[in-house]
Amino acid sequence: TPTSSHDAADEFFLRETPPVIGVSPSPVRICQCYQNLYRFATLYDKQNRIPVYSVYVYNPGKATRPGKWMVEPQLINSTFQSDMETERDFLNKKGPWSSLQDSQSVMKDYKNLKDYNRGHLIPNAHQPDYSAKSSTFTLTNIVPQFIKLNGGAWKNYEQATMQQMTRGCQQTFAVQTAMLLLWILSLAASFLLPATGEVVPSFNPCKTFFLDGKPPNLKPMNPARICQLYKNKYRFATMYDRDRRIPLFSAYQYKTGRGTRSEEWMIEPQLALPGDRLRKNMELDVTSTIQRTLLKKSQAVDQDYKEGVQYDRGHLAPDSHQSDQDSKAATFTLTNIVPQFHALNNGEWRFYEEHINTAGCKQTYVIVGAVPGNAFLPGDRVNVPSHIWAAGCCVSNQNNQKKSWAVIAENKQNTVVRLTLGKLQEQLAKLYGKRNIDLFSNACNTPAGP
Image 1 (tube, rainbow, N blue to C red):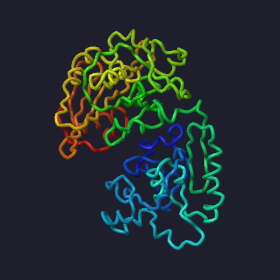
Image 2: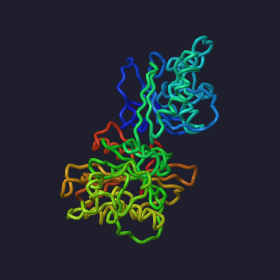
Image 3: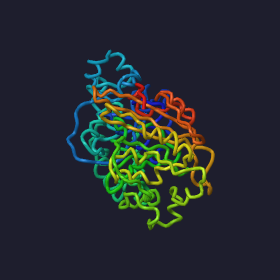
């Protein structure tokens, strides 16, 4: 998917920061999408029809070598599908040939080469499964590579050298350029977020909480993605703002059920101890053995909320929208909590939470978020949001039709405004200072009442 930035695929960059490399006047940023999942990221030179660089997380796995070469439809027209596809499929459905050939390299360009092969910037051998390997066979990831280099020293680097260099590394970020320079950015586990567990580089382990597995294009300056794990099961997903110590949003599937309300508040161990891969589950704040100074530096704690007279601990993912006792208990993590105006929490917001109409919905996806404000709780550690909002998408039992609803509230009065998803996204773009906000990947735009 060509984009104005790599935000949708920033999980492939170390510290979510793309490299700075001089390019031609016509670069295109591609979040490489295959089978509705982002696989890696590419900066593509449309003028010279080669990638400037491709970036990925090194994660080799066994699978047969794919053989189908693909193209990027959205280099021709941004309204075309986001998934890469074969030339034949493109020409059968969209055409014409001239539009494809003018936008990027095609199979014909690589025919009858004597001294060069199709050289992958991201090799299929560095991907974990067949689908991920297949995604590297897009011509937007290919450069003409000297045939002896491709089958000789470079192949040796891709296989033996890379394995040796990454021993002991919990995660390896790689950038490969068309100048055949390579940066390997490898850090030991004590300096990186774990690849699996609760605090994660991407939401892939808990993507089931997002419509079509796609999180919204919304993150703070210093984010932590949390797949909220309780009793070894993912319960919902949270984008956490480390600097302000509040969640930016939590996402879940709406499933109500009976259970008692928990009064025990939990914390996220891996925010404080990113190298501890064994502490994946949330823990009780009161009994946590993590050094207190380290814990408080990494996130909000129970004590932060004891002096906020006007504010409650406001759930983004509420316990009432969970199906069983364990899932309800999981929402009582402080990484799912913001300071919420007391009258709003117990008044109109509670009414909204208790009157969501999911009749006829096979699945209901909900995202609840907070807009950071200018005030903090006493102690100046935890931000008080200026607004709290929610959006839902109902996937209907009838032909999987999708309908949406949305609400927003100023966090200083007992009023909830109901509006369309489109209007909410427009308002959030202004509040967050973004060009645009897309909560459900433009896939749930038909309004429905809550």
